[in-house]
Picture 1: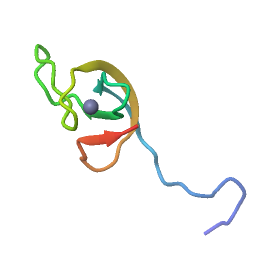
Picture 2: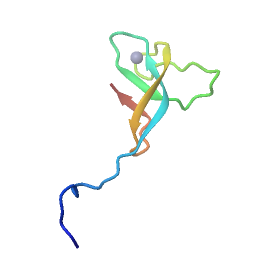
Picture 3: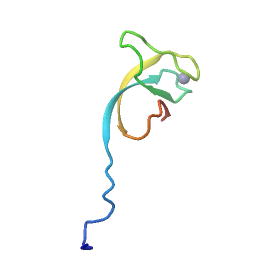
Picture 4: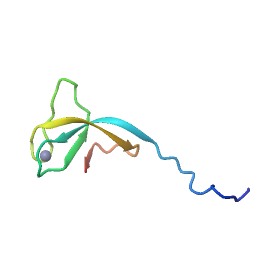
Length: 69
Ligand SMILES: [Zn+2]
């Protein structure tokens, strides 16, 4: 096996744009993936505020469904 330059970590980082919902509360940083029906506006799982639709670029990892900013 050749050891050369530019052959460092070949680990693949996959990014995907996903629709998410962000909490509308300024004091809460919670957001969730869009696992909801499109007609449905979810409530924040932490503070129960309304959530706003948004798009985030996320690294594809395991299937956590709740993140913080
Ligand atoms: Zn919240």
